Length: 258
Image (cartoon, rainbow, N blue to C red; front, side, top):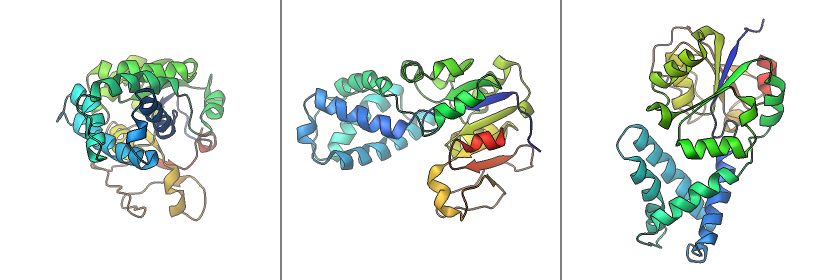
């Protein structure tokens, strides 16, 4: 029997908005516009370094180890330094161009629009996203996602990031809902799943890359102690079955659940 939810909380990046594909195109356009792509060599290799570096800097930012400006500007100068093509002082210009270019990329995760069309009108939907106000708002606007959501909660405007309980508490209070009436859908185990789990909110962990770990493309009920190759599933919180965790490999599987 399907559990009846009233509210759906969605993550944005790589859950609905295809961050990996859009970021790849945006950074390439920035390098072309600033006429420095000719100096960086193999772009795909450069982007791979950027992707890894950016993830680590976001972790440091989330843990308050670096400031917003250190993260936004420093990542580009660090990237070019690591690439062996240092360009002192270029970070600010690259950051400014990147922030303009990113929202203009509008590729969504496969199946996102179809699923949202199906869910619209059946549930009250909201986005909870870590990121900067101007950037996340632009992505939602330019990609056509805005019409699906009654509320958007951006970490910078709230003053804390997922998985901090405060951002979830703020969202719950804003929609005047109970935890058991909400389902959280996201691609990050650390921020989306663990954050919602601590609040007693059911979660859907969307992770296409884990599909190869299973013999069938079916919805998986997470149990404590499960492991998927090298993927770490330590919850970091007491697993007392106050909430359920399911794993899906395609967004269209949400239709089976809901």
